[in-house]
Amino acid sequence: MSAQIGVTGLAVMGANLARNLARNGYTVALHNRSIEKTDALLEKYGHEGDFIRTESLQELVDSLEKPRRVLIMVKAGKPVDSVIDQLVPLLEPEDIIIDAGNSHYEDTRRREAALAEKGLFFVGVGVSGGEEGALLGPSIMPGGSRKSYESLGPMLEKISAKYKGEACCAWIGTDGAGHFVKMVHNGIEYADMQVIGEAYDVLRSAAGIEPAEQADIFTEWNKGTLSSFLIEITAEVLRHTDPRSDKPFVDILVDSAGQKGTGRWTVVSALELGSPTSGIAESVFARGLSSQREQRLLAQETLKGHESSVELPESFVEDVRLALYASKIVSYAQGMDMLGAAAKEYGWELKLDEIASLWRAGCIIRAELLDDVMKAYAGEDRPANLLLAPAFAEAIAEAVPAWRRVVATAVQLGIPVPVFSSSLAYYDGLRRKRLPAALTQGLRDLFGAHTYNRVDAEGTFHTQWSGDRSEIEAVDTH
Ligand code: NDP
Image 1 (tube, rainbow, N blue to C red):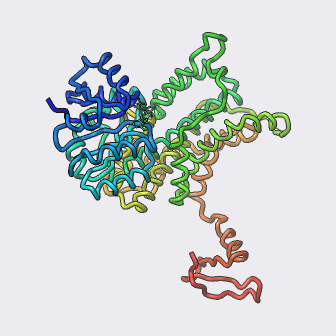
Image 2 (image 1 turned 90 degrees about the horizontal axis):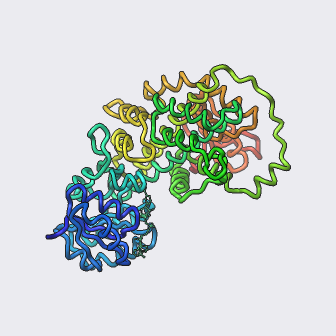
Image 3 (image 1 turned 180 degrees about the vertical axis):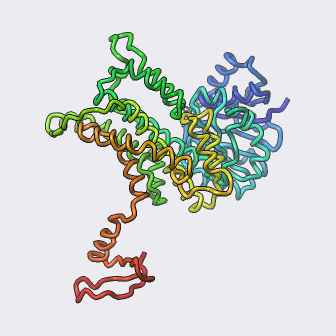
């Protein structure tokens, strides 16, 4: 018996993907650097399907049908390069190496180019859904050459999550496109969680609504346009009482949020692309600020707030829901805009409707809203920005008055709402007729002769600020 796919790296994610493949009828060859993990998997779950136990990468490769498919699921970074280096001499042209870990897309681009020179396919696959998703069906974002997808795609589609029967897996684009899209997914996940946190904070700090009562509110919200996995689990966490202290669970948690890096990668990449992804950036910064415990303690004693009291409208809870919804739409709009910028930069033909469709099930940001995002980008008439799609322009217009009230209330009460407020600023920035960027250009021309364009004439100009202030036509230095 030969295996259709080999998996090396059998920690939580690798083991669950291997089991998912076997449960779906594939024969899976198993390998791990240390044999204990392989044996533990076989002992506990060997009955779930057809597995082949191997002790070395040579044995793993020998057990596979051709063209061979080897899925690497080891720790991201150097271990991936090390495993690739060991595999390459054992493989033949047309064989496929798949990296389904959280690799940086630039690493994937580099690895793909190097392996292509050897006639091997390298497929960087973004996988979202955590441990449970890996086992039961994750959202899968494969990059690499289209040809490699012909051999690998059906397998990945079979083990992926399904949204109303449709596989949450499709070829994303060449080289690092899959890992790039997964990275932006994670960035949106940061923003999604931050806006939920801001809604919770405003409801609690402005309106005094305790966690258990908020759990009911979030459960209710989960029945409407906000329906999503993250809103659902927010209700679950808020409803939980800590058995040790009998306090709301959320109150016994240290308020410093950690991060593993994909949010930071998204922001670095957004800066490089010049993409205004402010919601994701503010979410990453909010986690950073939450972790500055020493400075926060000193600031609590030193910095004055001068908050003013605010009379909350009857509709306050509904206002917060609308602020959350509008900010969430902006985060998606920014993430999609960033994907568009990356597609231009890297020559990827990213299909935004298809990408939104892959996120409708299996992944952490799965939400009803994504079905609407998919529809907005489907067909010929693609919006230049998600906010300009008629359905979203209308939805957000309805939310704007409430959104402004919530941001104003939070500002007056000294409750930080970095994503609610920066998303509103993005919305206003997009729609504003004149931006103060005009003044910025004037300043740049004065101190650095950076030149400017005029609203009333073609060309690039410079004012001779230190001379007679006459204008000359300049060569564009940008
Ligand atoms: P870990 O990231 O904890 O990595 C452990 C595995 O890597 C073990 O099998 C270990 O082997 C192996 N390994 C480490 N170094 C080497 C090396 N130099 N050579 C060979 N093997 C090595 O495993 P996870 O299952 O948590 O994650 C795997 C990947 O999936 C990571 O990229 C991670 O970021 C990503 N991930 C994705 C998630 C998602 O939702 N998509 C969630 C969690 C993780 P040994 O047993 O011998 O030590």
